[in-house]
Image (cartoon, rainbow, N blue to C red):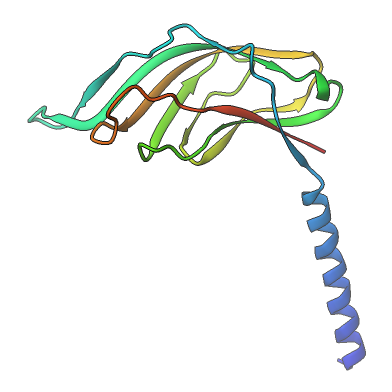
Length: 159
C-alpha cells in the first residue's frame, strides 16, 4: 500500500469520526421547570432497614418512601424530540440510592446521587408531562443527622 493511500484512508476515518462526534455533541441540555411537582408528604418518614439473613440485626441504612406528583413544564420544547432525565447531585450525606415506579407516562427507574437517569424519550406534544412517582430512598443512616432535603431536578436534552 502506498503512503498516499494510507494517509487518505486515515483522513477519511478522521472525517467520519469528526462527523459522529459533531452529531453527538449537537444535543443541548436544559433544566426543566418542575415547580408544579408536589410531594404528597412534606417529610417522608424513614426507618432503619433490617439486615437480611437469619440474625435480623438492624442495618446501618435508613429508608423512606413517598409519592410525588411530577409535573414538568416542557412547553419550550413542544413539537420537538427530547430526552428527559431525573438528576440527583452528590449529597452531603454520601451515597443516596433512589428507585421509583410510575403510572406509565414517564419511565420507572433508579439512580444514585451524582447520576441522572432517563425518564422520557420521544416527541413532546403537550406543554406539560405529568405522572405520579412512588419513590423509595435509601441512605447510610450513620451519616444522616437531621432531616435532609434531596435536590432532585429534571434535565432535557434536545437536538
